[in-house]
Image (cartoon, rainbow, N blue to C red; front, side, top):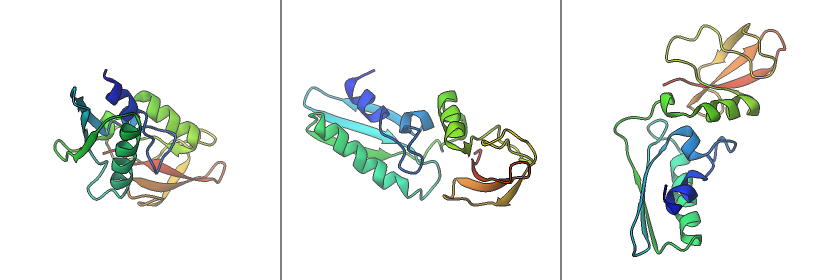
Length: 151
């Protein structure tokens, strides 16, 4: 792992700051040369994700502050990102943060409440605080929570 990769991997997701872009699996590749140039490839969680511009700016700032002379960030759309690229650590961090992590890609009839652990939940809205999450409510503790959609 290169120094540039380690710096890039530590960039937090602006919408879910408890996970890094490496945790989410959106950091695809980081290459550096002996001239101080870095090329970073990232993939959005979904087409049009507004966080990508902030992530790009954060990458340029962090790598420039580390002494790299030129930083290029490329958005890679193929293959499309999938929740399978998320690390187990990312899913655990999301749950601890109060966001139900994605499960296997399927029709979710119930999602485990990150507050109390109950499976007696219902989807309140297909879209939550961001388009990649849906809003659920626990019938047991009555708390609303976001669920990171499986893609």
